[in-house]
Image 1: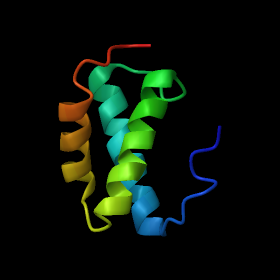
Image 2: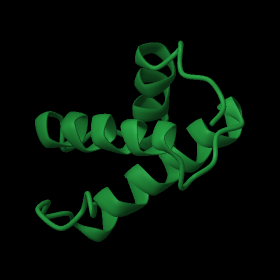
Image 3: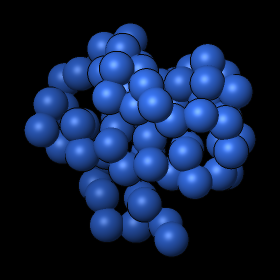
Length: 73
């Protein structure tokens, strides 16, 4: 499933999501292509749609808090 197919993102938004997801995956020791990363991407895109000016640091913090129970794939 391509999460980005139906989402209109600017280059800045792509950078925000990419930076946050890479950081979250590294912190959680999660595979970037795994199901946990896909869940984090879905949440990141949802958050970005409601808060388009969110920074990658803010997004990473929210992902870490909301997905704290997600372990390694």
